[in-house]
Image (tube, rainbow, N blue to C red; front, side):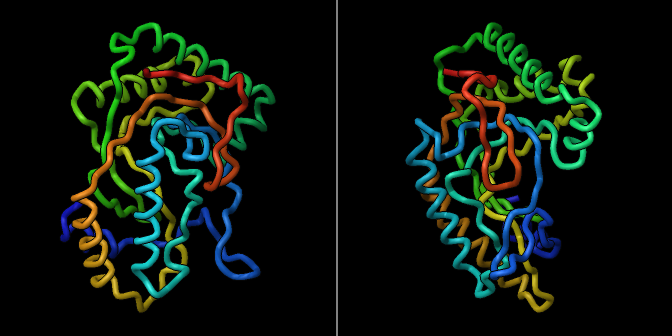
Length: 250
């Protein structure tokens, strides 16, 4: 995904994200997109990865300077930067589940409390850091971010095993949570807004590739020290109550 020819191919398919719509006073605003996710603490509540997120904010600014069309990329608030460890439920599926079952959210949180507790008890590498690092710029059909790779196999397996514990949990499956095994670790920096018909996509691909080459010389590590169940109303803020489930890796 980091090769110049990959960028050239990917930019041919970028399209407007429905998660952000034009605002009356100009620019774009997030639209309602509610749900739950398992993620690392967002930057605004982070205690470990402050240097990493500072670098990421600079990367975001550099991406926004690539194009003269200010509406092409809608930045997410840096305070919300995070690594998604496992998607849970969102949008219409979440709304339908809540409509059919008034206790859905409470049952969901109870399930994750049990999953996290069981996983914590089964962990054999307590206290050993789980480290990932930036591989490079990642272009998705409706968003742009950075892709992460694990420091070693153990760091990879810790996250994959957690995802397996989540998606294979019978109680969670009974609540309608679908199993999603495909995992591309990434942190989203922005979503595509207005994609003009006359956009010079080849030039944009070259600029993405050149920027990525600059970043490769400065790739800070990211410490996965905590997994949290969080709720979101749109793609700009992720929150939790103090008694919601948490899994500490170190």
